[in-house]
Image (cartoon, rainbow, N blue to C red; front, side, top):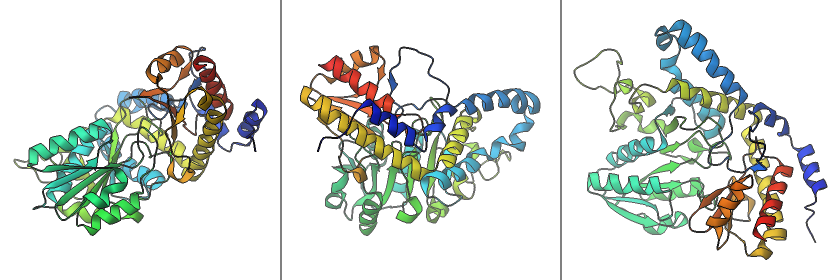
Length: 399
């Protein structure tokens, strides 16, 4: 049976889309040459509310209250926003998530903390195809602590983890293929071996439900500028399960993570709970985008967001099978909806050159070496007709 990929079907899918109205919440794309924006899995589009909120903060909170705003509002933001992010997107009870730093810094903190919680164990396990920052940091932390790095495929942790494993760190969703790793199953296997897990949620948060508490997760980190649309360089987040808080010692011991921030004590005493994960002054301006992105996700509902991500993925696969596979493209992402995250990756022998051509012609996608073209599907901003136009343009330019 032939799948209907007509313009009329694309229009019907858009008309039936429960999230279609949310597209109006975003700042319009200012470049008339853009056919489709399919890179929201790298950088989400800006919200109108973020621009308004930034103006309000500059004029009233910062401009009006000046330094008084720290005590009145800003000092509590990392924990307040972390709790809301945990509730809306992470399946995390209050007091376990904090907004701070970059993903790289948060990952360094959690890797060091997790390793310290497993003294006498001398191995860190990670995925051979994990995101470069994750792999680089694993090697850096291993070198600092005199540990050995063991390499595995994400689904082969059971074959690699053992009595010497201190920490396993993996990405929940593969940044190249969008393959979803079974977070709960991997966590269970690592715990059976006595190790701890640090999860990278960069390509899952805001795109699919994450249930950290239910899975018994130890630590997690992630960014907010992809599916949460918080803006370029927006602060990241760090999750630490409450059962680890008493012994949680992170290595970047700045004043904001101290028990008495303004005590100017001679020695560092960590704050109770998740606040001890902080280091320097919170990036208040950057947190505005996180706040608005999380609020929009709460309104839309992660269940509806996930349902649309699945539908968009199916749509890309149908269009690719009909138009692009005959031109030499292959599908790198899982076809099973339950195993595919929020993007679809197409492979092509000439992908790097073709990616530049596509971007020049208004199809904003992402290239990943050696031969991957990522079709990013951000459910709150991406439409079905938009995707069809983009895939048609790819067919035209690759043919």
